[in-house]
Image (cartoon, rainbow, N blue to C red; front, side, top):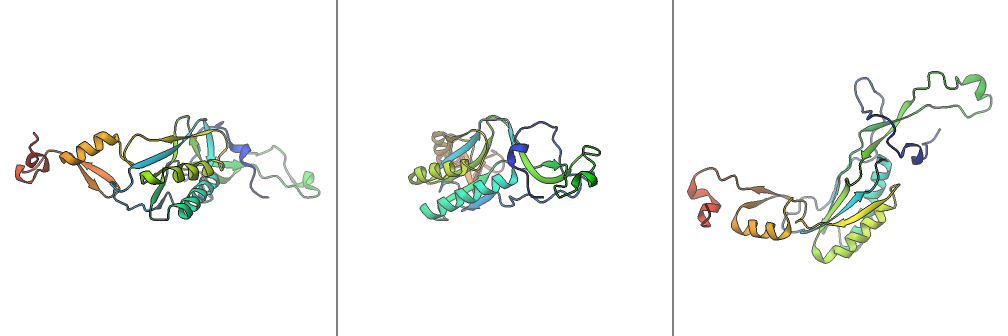
Length: 217
């Protein structure tokens, strides 16, 4: 028996059902890599970021998430080069999908028990997503904006339902708007720390404080 179509598991009908010591034998998620591309690129290198935002309350299987990741990675690898973007998958599949396996061979009606003991066995995992939830984000340079949008558009076809592509006003994967980010980096309030930024905590000796040496309180 193969996989059931994703339409059987598209909607959130049941309570969250996760892998535990009681729910054993759950197949591994198809998506194992959540960050692709130049994931160690410094935060200042990739200011542009676009998000794929879900517009429905639904479930997205791990197979669909992996298919979208591969499609986006393939397009960006061809167009902008593998060192010029960073994809981050933001939806994680933890919800276990079940199926009551039925026999479909000749004489199955004699062997199968119908709807008796019909609680299914785990067959896969899915992510439960809400309206307005970000499914994935891509950061890159400003010049590569059209390629990033096109790549996300191609990845969108792997999901059921409706999604929207949003261009963020923030700098990369940080929480600061572009103007605020530039100002705070110049003043020393923010310090680059890999692909994110650290906020100056205003502690320690004054002679070592970047803010104090820059003339701030």
